[in-house]
Image 1 (cartoon, helix red, strand yellow):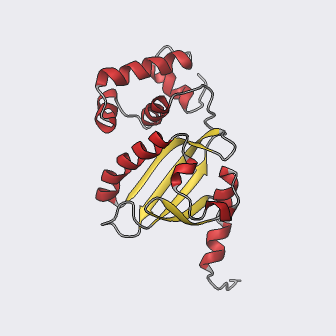
Image 2: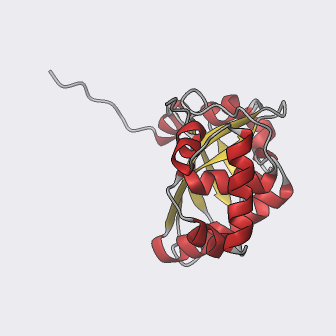
Length: 186
């Protein structure tokens, strides 16, 4: 027996099991309840806000935007895991995916989803903004050379940040560091 349901896209958007929003130039136009709840805001409080309110620092917001643009220009979509900030200041790991409505405008109108992955990957050490950025890229499996190119740092500087991360997470190898960053105990 097949039930017939009228498609109501607003209801689908509002009740989606992941945080979702529509944005234009990194400003939230509409957000669903899952997104507002995840970040600790009222839904209406997010509308008209820059994505910057979801980032730990302005510098991370700007660097992430700079990293997203070339990828969106080529693929029309972007996805990564990064540390984000709730309204109460708590930091957490979040899987973020987005797609431009017009592939010619990377950060123009787009649809973005956010999934809290902090249960699988808790934030356990105090990290600087740059360490958070490098940690996120290490988790993606990127090498120091690739991270250096993407962040406009020297490979030596990336190695210095990796060494600091290894000390903070008490990791003796890079592999162990990545396992600890993703919340896998060895």
